[in-house]
Length: 200
Image (cartoon, rainbow, N blue to C red; front, side):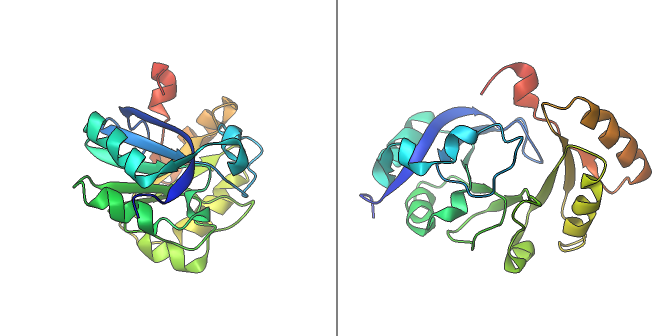
C-alpha cells in the first residue's frame, strides 16, 4: 500500500482558509485530475494528471509527519477521480483527522472525518454523495447561481452548514451574496481568507 502512487499537483502546510474549519493548521494534498471544467477555476493547473508527478503514499506520510498539522485536507482538482482508499488508510494510521474537498461528481472512496461538498452545475454530484456531506460550499458568480445553491441545499441534512462563496475574480458576486444572506439567513458567507492574506 505504501508504494501506491497518486498524481500530486502540490502539497503544502498552511491554514485552512475556507468553511467551518477556517483558521486551522492543515496539511494540503492537492491531487491532479479534474473533468468538471469550471470556467472560473483557480486551479486549472490541476486538470491534467499527466502533467504532475506520481507520489507514493509513503512519501506523503513522511511529509505529513514533518508538518504535524491539526488536519489533513485532500483536495484537487477532483480527488474522487482516484480511488482514495489506499491513501486514507495510510494517512488514518497517523492519527490526523482527514478532510475531503470535492464536487461530488464521482463515487465516494476512502475514509474521511469531514467532507466539504462544493457542487458545480457543470457536472452535478452523484445522488449518493449528499448523505455524507459535512458542509456545503457553493460558488456564486451570478444571480442565477442562487437557484443552483438552493437545489443543492435541499438534498442535504438541515443541520449541515451552508456557505455561499464569491467567485474570486468577480467582485460583484460579493454584494450579491451579502444581500442574499440577509434575506436567507440559513446561509453563511464563505470567504477564501487565505487569498486576502496572500498565503497559499
